[in-house]
Image 1: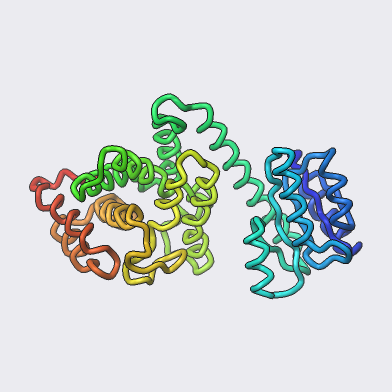
Image 2 (image 1 turned 60 degrees about the vertical axis):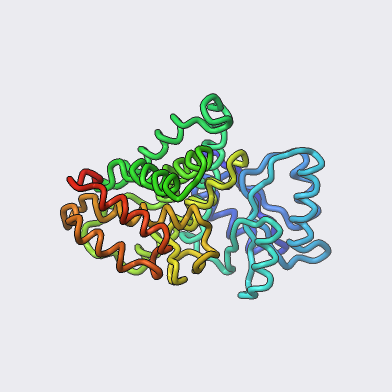
Length: 336
């Protein structure tokens, strides 16, 4: 482990604490007392992550991140991921920090274990984003900048985390593409939604296998980790600038038409159309796949559940297309 973490804070006690905790965790740590020292440092040194205090004299955290981003643009440098350190619960400050490009906030005072885990998780996520982007950039032959083979391989890797969802991502992609075709999407948009379907669960890469494969009831904390996968997936796919709509399927496939879904509680037509299609396909495959606690659900029951969810869980027009596909599947072959 040789990730370089820079901590900027005018409080010597915080610097000493962060240096001790992160050094013990194996990170290379540099501690600086001001934003101006950071700007001098970053011009001749690399950093994998920056922990930046908001309230500092002379040049506060917001001014510092603005100066940093401006310099990075001028020098055509990759943006250093920034996490703000803050001692208050000011939602306005948090919103401003996120709008300026911060990844997250860490409250002070912080516990050693919490800090280590948060930093490790964020650096792993950033590394995954960069690896995926490098792979995407390298494999450009089949779909301009995104190789279908790479996406299929990634989808299989995602599904392999769950012993009971073998082939889930590809089936969701196939169902989504067929719904889109019947709704009237042209071939290009059908291919787009197929790729979205393949990568809709990419955020599960960041969820521990022990939670995904737990056979008993999940605790509230474990369920909370599961519910983070749409946001984590969106963060991963945001780096693929060549196909910005990939984020759509990953972030919003668990939204509900009645607004009671997650992560953003979007409602009705506010949910992107592709995400509404993937939501129906995802729910259908969940019901028609084996689980540790049940077999494949009978087709008439699946049909009933889709009907029951029209207008609440699902957009009615896409649910009706799915029902048409079920009606045509007279031998019930459309399952895992």
